[in-house]
Image (tube, rainbow, N blue to C red; front, side, top):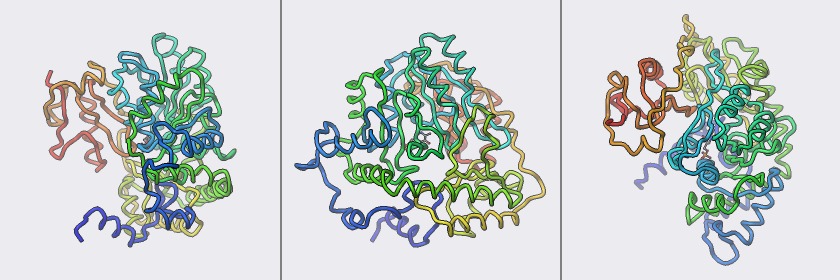
Amino acid sequence: MTAPLYEALMDYVKKQIIPFHMPGHKQGRIFPEEYLVNLTKIDLTEVPGLDNLHNPEGPILEAQKLAARAFGAKESFFLVNGTTSGIYAAMYAVLDPDDKVLIMRNSHKSVYNGLVLTGAVPFYINPEIDYESGIPMGVNIDKLEECLKKNESIKAVVITYPNYYGFCSDIEKISDIVHKYHKILIVDEAHGAHFPFSGNLPLSSLQVGADIVVQSIHKTLSSFTQSSILHLNSDRVDTNRLKYFLSLFQSTSPSYLLMSSLDLARDYMEKEGKNRLEKAIILADYARHEINTLGGVRCLGEEILGSFGIVDFDKTKLTISVKNLGITGPEAEGFLRENFNIQVEMADTFNILAMITLADNKEEVELLIKGLANMKNLKKDKKLEVEIEDYPDVPEMVLKPAEAIRQKTKWVSLEDAEGSICADFIIPYPPGVPLVCPGERIKKDMVKYINVLYNKGIKILGLNKNNSLLVCEI
Ligand SMILES: Cc1ncc(COP(=O)(O)O)c(C=O)c1O
């Protein structure tokens, strides 16, 4: 057999690596047996009786209605191209070319790509940054209101809630303010699909009147990767227009595996899933407490509340700072993989992120704690210093993103990029927060900052092998 991807997957499976990452089902631990044995047989198409995602009238419509009821939405729509496609559809549903939209600077790439697609003009709101952990956190409510007050022509606001690490801005206040100024609130709730199912988790933005909410069910619940749901939750959005764009961004051969896994994930959460979720929260609380007694490492939590625009956090996310050991997140990630057969969700400069979901168990969490305890052996004399205070300001926007990506481009080395207009996104990934967007001028401080990340071994999308980036020829 010569099937390199398949073989790589089989090799990975053989290693029995312990997953503290997405998808939430953790390699199929909580699917019914009947589903697993019939998986290939239900990889079907729009044959009679199985409905059509693009014009649902039968079981797909019914499944979507059940999802709307379970998640607390007016209407819900299955997505087979991830939350990414839902964000595009949501932005298209409310924005015309040159319409103004307020977005968070630490938005996911899909929101930025939504700008490129729609031709909308972005206004940015910088997240509050926790310099100690290096994490872009929440929205400053006053800044949000000031921006909406000053720019009456803004039509919609796109908020990421929670952030990748599970920290939550004050979504209740955000919703009030956005609606006070008669704007439409779109929430990228990719990491909060489990919120509606526990009173011990932050509020879902669905509970506070957000207009459109998009959730990656595959991330924190139990559906297959790439399956998400867009929830429509108000009368401020033209439903027919939304439906058109939902259809446009989805395959005409939507996978019944993905759609059925969404249906099952919802059913699971209405039954034993709720209990499992409470257990996951207790397990994560236990892990956070134990990790914080180890010394050297620090698991972020309640102490963040009340700062950086953050009012709540998702306890199932373990954000572990390794900064005081003098090692980087990627080094810590590698240590856990090589010595404890553990794979975490992601690593950034100072932290690793481990996800506890419905599918986790105590033994594996104990192993994670043991691995973190052993990390002390890696301790370096020098504390890890990255001048995070120097995080550069949002660069000046010379062209809107949709214009910039249509310019003629050339590669220039990072050293020579000062003064150029960027033609691509420069994104350290994860966590996927763009430093520079198409149409923005690259200044000296940005060149310096990108170099720092590069030298730390952080993967930077937008930089090629020769450390060059794509700029507009003008
Ligand atoms: C904040 C955020 N929004 C949106 C997305 C896109 O979600 P999906 O992978 O379901 O397309 C991601 C994925 O990582 C994300 O982190």
